[in-house]
Image 1 (cartoon, one colour):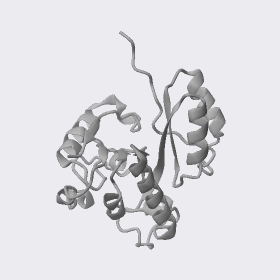
Image 2: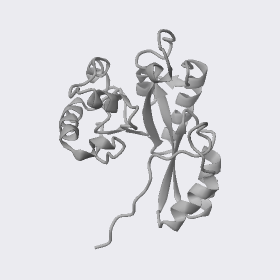
Image 3: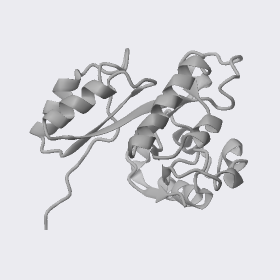
Length: 218
């Protein structure tokens, strides 16, 4: 039985300032050398490397997955006060484009984050994520995500902001959500509860990035 190839879905290039250090051509070559058939780019708060990555990945026969690691405000993106540092001003959330529509929505989100939500970092919020969710895949993010912060803080219920949005998801959102993403607008609340319980029992809690279960929003 042939094993399914491993693919990185959360990867930073040198376009992630003060974080990533890998040039895109070296990232693509490394993926090719390891026999990967695809690779995602998820730089912090920007899509600056998307075109370069797409062209170089295609040139090496690697399927490019375009995305970015968004900074998402705890409340409204227009609230810009009282945070002592960037960690208090935003959570991290990994977004991937599933198709052309999804990539266009990533561009809209990244642009509005710079123009409307900048506070320490370029931030989106759940309002505009819900409005531009079509064609997006939303992962639970790293240890700095809202989900990971809730679990590491001992909570196994939805954050109040997410609970208030349970009924707001059905209208037009066609995004695909990681079942761990309790912080996303439009997330399936029942999945969030059961995943929170299983995450607390799992030894993978030490590495919150390791999440593979995907839930598709209806």
